Length: 321
Ligand code: 8YV
Image (tube, rainbow, N blue to C red; front, side, top):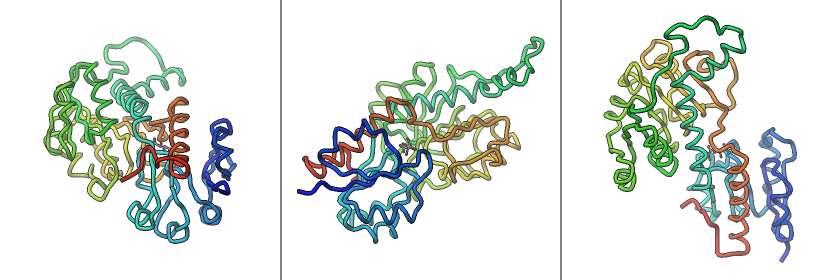
């Protein structure tokens, strides 16, 4: 059989592709850190039987209508809101993602963002860089405690549970909201299920880890921020679109909530002109939840294993159902 052609939409390390080159003909967008232009993606994908793509590639109806020959689309992410799954499945295309392998790393980052926001780490670092560290005073750079506070996790999937384990280590009390009850988290971590309104009203830290869907779009809106404590800290490590960013900006500016830590935004990338990045009480990160060298390597390997399983094995390890 002729080696299947796999188009890869971002430059990936050669040594990770190497083990598969006897079985696949890899074609790759070569410009590092620049997303593949839409017209190139459409033209190149047509020559391929498999695709490795990223969150920023829109695999929508138009793309799928032009590429029914694809056998597999392997997304380098656990989320797949960039792909029209229903249409892909109708066309008989297998879609895969990278669950599990990034959960602990993303939970590390989520907790780091929570800590950086609560203890004002970014502002404090700026103090020194701007030569503003002066005489001692009791409340200089004072943030808020993390230990023994109440964390509310919205979206208790694999990453949510990993965040809850970290919270337990900080003696926090844990509320969660999820479509399904999570008995293991309740028994092992003492996490308590709460409806959305109770969670946002009672929690000191509200952490969004929900996948983006029609139900979660702008879930955190003016009404939700209005119900949070004035001392609440909002953390988002899921998708920007689950937040009404204008409402969040107002809530932070007007002191309706204390601070926010954001790894994701509605339209990425953002820059220093984005209203949320202009606020002192916000820590912004450039969507780096899963960005450790170890985890990105494992994610890439899983993406390639999934493709290998479709063409030469028993099917993919992690298909999107
Ligand atoms: C992505 C993410 O992996 O996995 C997800 O859903 O949001 C990130 O970890 C990253 O943006 C690369 O596509």
